[in-house]
Length: 176
Image (cartoon, rainbow, N blue to C red):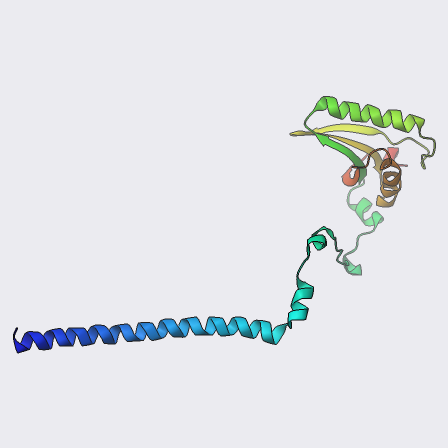
C-alpha cells in the first residue's frame, strides 16, 4: 500500500472521528437539560406533600365541584323570559328508543300522580312524550322557574329516582 493511500485513509478516518464527536456531545447536552428541568419543576414548585394533595384518589372522581359564577354573568329568571317567553324547564323521566316504553312511562306517571295528594301546584303538570331522533323522551311539566321544577323533582324522585331537570320550550299558560 502506498504512502499516499495510507495518508488518505488516515485523513478519512480522522474526518469521520471528528464528525461523530460533536453529534455525541450534542446528544449528551440535549438529554441533560430535560432531566434537570423535571427535577427542578418538582423540587422548586411543589413539595411531595403538596403534590400528593393535588392527586385524585379513587373516591374523588365522583365528587363534583361547582365554580362560582360572577354576579355580572348571572341570569335571573326574568332575564331568560325576556329573551324567550317560551323558555323554561321540564323534568325528564326517561329517554328511550322504544315508543311503547315511553308511552307506558307516561301512563305510569299519570297513575302515580292521580293517587298522590300532595302536589304543590294548582294544576297537575302534564306529561309529554316527544321524539328527537333516535330517542323518545318523557318530560313532565311547564315550569318557568327552575326552583319550581326542583320542588316537583324532589317529589317525583320518590317514584322516579332517575328523573332530572332539563331546559325546554314550554307553554307558559300551563306553568304553575
